[in-house]
Length: 142
Image 1 (cartoon, rainbow, N blue to C red):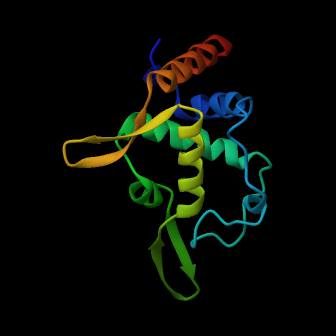
Image 2 (cartoon, helix red, strand yellow; image 1 turned 45 degrees about the vertical axis):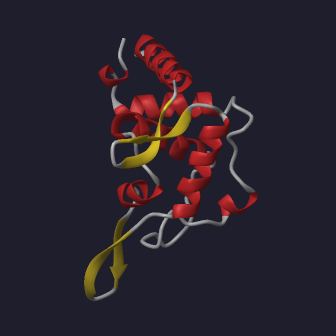
Image 3 (cartoon, rainbow, N blue to C red; image 1 turned 180 degrees about the horizontal axis):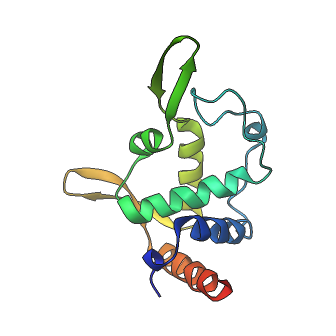
């Protein structure tokens, strides 16, 4: 059972539920007021959006690693409505992404590395087994 065999949404939902059980990963006090980027008008309405974003970032690190905050900001960006003017692309919130990456590092699911000229974070063996276990459980529940 590979991580790639399961749909991304199913993997993210299941791993978000599993990340809630890890003590190190929790939303900071300011997270309930924070927008996820300059292109958003309001903060997220979902209660556990922090864990969903953490699971999505964990999956992105798996698929694209080594990857850093700058590239993840582009991945989680979007078009900003500017009224009657044309839309413009804006990056996602760097503080949210950076904080989640630091929490995932404390949980030992990812680590910083350098591969050639690329600096960034990649999955650790513990992170790999975490995602494999979640994928296996998600596949069973289908």
